[in-house]
Length: 146
Length: 366
Image (cartoon, rainbow over all chains, first blue to last red; front, side):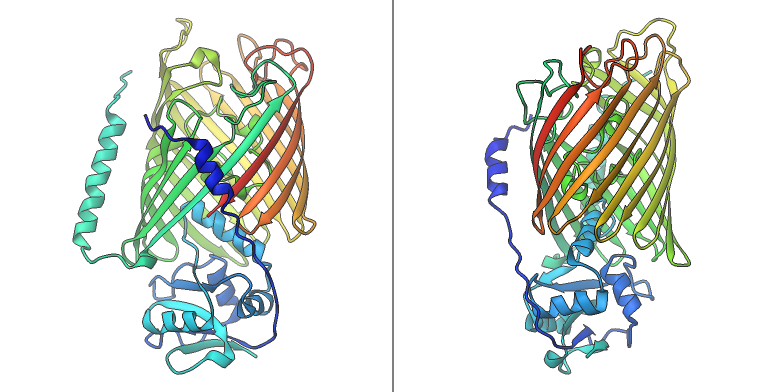
């Protein structure tokens, strides 16, 4: 039988608390995909559906790898407030439920605009968001909010 | 009635071989993003003002046993359509301290249809799929009048389910037909069931979920032939017994207001087994990181020879979001069992007055 000191494990986990801070600086946000993607434009409604796990595949049936930015990043704050128009905690609750009910895995979290852009540029089938000022021709913009 | 002790071991090893074959077909190494590891943990302490144990473990000496749990989930994306999910859980429930609650392959046929096969959660309830992930619900534990494992010992089954999704205007409808069997050894909860072996045959069901932006309605029905061994039963009881289970639920989850409720009904075709009805209703209101909530719940066992299983309770609780990934919860539950003669509710024996149960829990997801 499996024996583990549960007190030690719980103690370790309890010390694992991540604190999130929040700040908000205004700039436009662009939703980007890999240049090889068949997606040309997306409505904000469709983006909301992807980022709230209502839709898990592209129209052609291929899977989509969603990329998020770390909590506290200004681009993330803009994306939640102006594109998703939902609270971070409500979106988080939705993904947590999808994950632990075995229905979908949550987006990959990368640190900032530069990391997201680099990841999208080198991974077909991925989608993310960065500030409009970070956009260049290594990625394709499918939605833009100034 | 046959108890194939090796059945589970056989299924597990067959499953592992199956996975190994899939992995060898797709022999390219996995990229890091193709494997996701997540987990959840609850450290919970519960104490009662009664010396008669509640839910088999909680008495006036206090206990960490009822809610404390550690779970680890690994999701492996094999290709665009196929993925593997396994979830292992360590807790003190039942006799197995380490359990695989989930271990299935998920094949996404298209955006509307997903097939899952392996070890899956039995969807008796609205919250069955995330039952042990405390972070996903307001209370320290789901209301035990409905969720108590005394009347539903099979938390998972080996089989398949289909997740079929439709768009209905602004709403989404999910149909989940499922089929598969369970076997389990329990239980600390009811002393006479200690060491008993339970098994289902011919088990299947259908669950439906209709979800709007903030509102979710669910309904489920399932049936099974239920047999057990190692329990002293009167000779009049002819096993196996058919048991049907029906449930309805709703969740209204707005930015601040949370409303939840569920009704369940269990029917057995042998009068020795309790037919039971149970329900709860919860209201919560988020104020920043705090959510006070109130729950009413009732379990009604309409049984022969004695109506043991009647219980009503009121629970007042407070949930605090410590961070995006962790929450602290405190609650007080007042339980009454004496509205029906001889009832013991979810206690191990008769209690004289109302019982007051205090719980504190720290929930974490990672």
